[in-house]
Length: 495
Image (cartoon, one colour):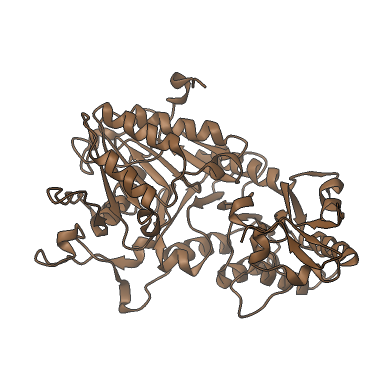
């Protein structure tokens, strides 16, 4: 299918990496004449969002830098190859386990040995590479929740923020990439392949606070001491190492920024999370409820638990149960909804809510000086803070009212997914307790937004048909299609 490239070029950004030449961190000529910041959302706009990203790579003039956690979309390959053939230098930092895949190793070899005007270079991050951003020509940025996958394009709830300024936020991300690149292991292909050059890093330009847009990243929890030039690490391209500030696990740069936004909320906090595993954030949301703030939380199917276990990491049940304990709330429906598509979510059938955003104090009149959007790659987890590279960016004030409004629209779309008159789609709900050819289904190909109480009711209806069924829901069940009521056994399993 032919894309309208003239239209897609309008904004920019997406995936890849490249060398600094005249567009380096110190080049002040990068200030855009007109700042534009917009968002797109999967799955409703997934194909268009990815097309925009890929076309931005193809149309790059000098360099592209990208961080990659997951890579299964072949259109990404084509965009990289087209850019390199146009003379662009592309740098890509990979998630460690991704880099070990045989198919990707073959792909990297092919790309790095291309006979083209430009070049491709790869590095493997020293820890989980969970950020999903791209910088193009030092002028355009996309920061996203989405991986380079068909699921992110066609099935999951994802967001993409495209921007060409302010110039300082591009510089912040340039420095973020430099930290990841300079600490990563070079991917060599053959004995004559030398290690890639380090990228310039300007500490004072890694984060710019006190402005309308601020980058918070897990890499900011560390100092970056140099590796000795004679060390094995240095000869692998690891010019620096990450050393936790304070000598312990390090601070909580991203978590604390999120908590600060919640604590300063006056009217509302709307959260859309893939994973919600930080108790301090749950406590901050509960405190906001007690102050009279309108708090709503929507999460992925994987976050549902029948009850809260203090030893478990999932915090949505913690928020739900403690919200119910607030005086006057016991008989009310908790402001928690789940993007529900399975009794046992499995990667092969995921319809994820993959968002990681909060919208604070936005109002229907067009935002306010105090309204804040927080969005990026950071799941609400200890892992995101201290075991991988992740980020969140805050967009504050009326300048970003249109961007904030687009995220409010996305929140409401998921909050009301397959619902009418504030009731869930009865056909989808009934599907889970309907026996067909002796079997109850485990998965559905359409998601519906359910409250915690509605999930309890759904499960009660399933128990009435097959009392033993839910007790067999475990990790293996996710690979199965259903449960045979007469045999009391999982069926259609692939594992």
